[in-house]
Length: 267
Image 1: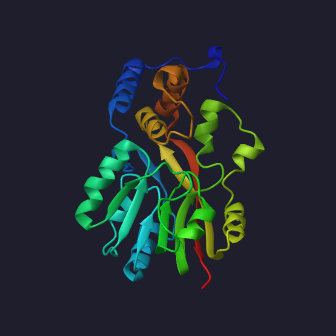
Image 2: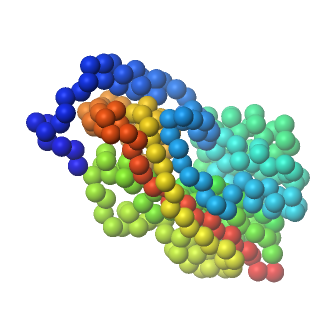
């Protein structure tokens, strides 16, 4: 929790002006797509050891028909060396749909606008590979339906209490049911309940650092479910407190949680 006002160190000369400049910059930049390169030099995040994009590339190289659910701006799919024909991607947010279309159409992939609610707009057993990076919700029954017998679902997902040091800085302590959501073992149980066999399940806790308040603002604007309804105006006093901590104490450290799940449909 923040120190009481009388206990806080007064801001250094120029600190308020730097705060205003950093916040204004981060509040104005586009947050379309799922490319975080704007944070280069301003924030760092350890990457999971399994290398999701590499695994997707390997699976795509062997697939006959593939689906990428909630593709974002299509960045991961565009990095795959060889895409099967057909390859289809779904996305719900209009700016991302446009970005993914521009990125993936030259690769021969089709982008379908979809509300991320069941049913998926595809027939039964349409794909032998379904992938998804950081889905908001995983509709396991639908995944099982569109997978061909013997087909594979491969997904990297956000785990429980991911970056909650930052979430709770703004929202305060979260209840156990919120902190415990997105449990990998729950994903396993849901996949198995849909009739899939889980063949791989791995989880990691990864160090994340934010070096300046602009990085925090950009992150919270882009990853909108972290602090729902986040705006600079609403959280300006708290942002100013965190800016002072960053200026005097160094980077803000949080921990990202990720898990990899791979499931197959029985033949």
